Amino acid sequence: MKSLIENRNTRPERVFLVGVERQNHDRAALRDSLAELGELTETAGGEVIDTGIQKMESLSPATFIGKGKAEEFAKFCKANDVDTVIFDDDLSPAQCRNLEKIFEC
Image (tube, rainbow, N blue to C red; front, side, top):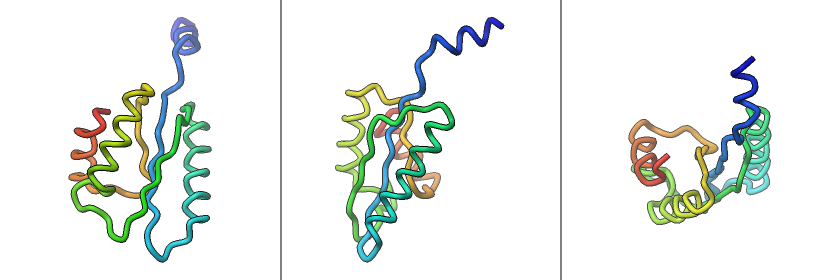
């Protein structure tokens, strides 16, 4: 019973969603995919704080999105007390590691 009471007193995990709009891809499909990801996040008990989208011709091998955009999103996340950043695509282990350093979460 104690753990149930403790869980009710904690805030939900604050989440920032990230998507990439690639050239020759449907923008509506990206928005739908991010909306679905947001619903899944809320179903899991998280709170979506905002969504960031970057338009790119090709993905960055080091950070998936551009390093400048990653730093911009990280600054937003720090200012808004975001706990977790979720990308709407698969990331390589190296990309995850590099992004964890930038976002510090």
